[in-house]
Image (cartoon, rainbow, N blue to C red; front, top):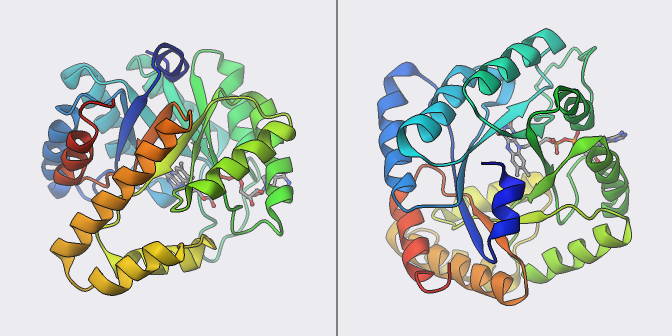
Length: 285
Ligand code: FAD
């Protein structure tokens, strides 16, 4: 099923994300995690695309497993910065032949010592190429606090408009920890003429140090209330996991209460975290 159809048919949608293994030996372990997360009956599941494309084979295989063996709608991520057009067409052909209908079209992070790419500079070019095919439901990434390479949030929103106009059917947001930042972003993009559905990305934090590092790299902010939680529990993995799940649950309930219809949980191959979030929302979603 296309994600746009899911979003139209549900007042509250919930999805989970997994990432592919780096090696063949780790594949079975990732599949076991995918199976447990799929058993929670999410509305769809996304599978990321390894930076540089080195794990693309596993991404496609996991998306196929979701669709064929688990009956869950897959969203396959695809990034273009390390590919040429022929490579992208080959990957799209595989997805299409497997009956996968949803693709999250990404540029990808610029690799170190990057020599440049003649075919793709921005995700909007990939979106346009996929659109030409006419058969995929296409998602794009968006950044409630601005993409780190953008000089301002407004410049980023102007570029987002180009990407959406190239053919995005929906957007999924970068993780955020302050819902007000997300509401303010939504209002700004609507003012800029971007009307496609936006799925809110929520990360249940289980590792305090890791999230501090990630946020400092991405330019995102940690609200003081959440920073205090990380400062207090960040060195105790069990306590941080419990607090991170509680904080994410509160964010999700607030989002639904404020009319946001779809939340994507960055569940990071952790079935126990996905299950706890699901249980906390058992009468809500
Ligand atoms: P773009 O939309 O191309 O934007 C990149 C930068 O270029 C932005 O600063 C934008 O403002 C600017 N820009 C865009 N168009 C123009 C233009 N026409 N002129 C000037 N500037 C422009 N990475 C992976 O490797 N694998 C994944 O599976 C993956 N999944 C992700 C899922 C989500 C929901 C999100 C939010 C991110 C994901 N990423 C993933 C990370 C993503 O690849 C990086 O954030 C990357 O740096 C930007 O990708 P993008 O598709 O947003 O790029």
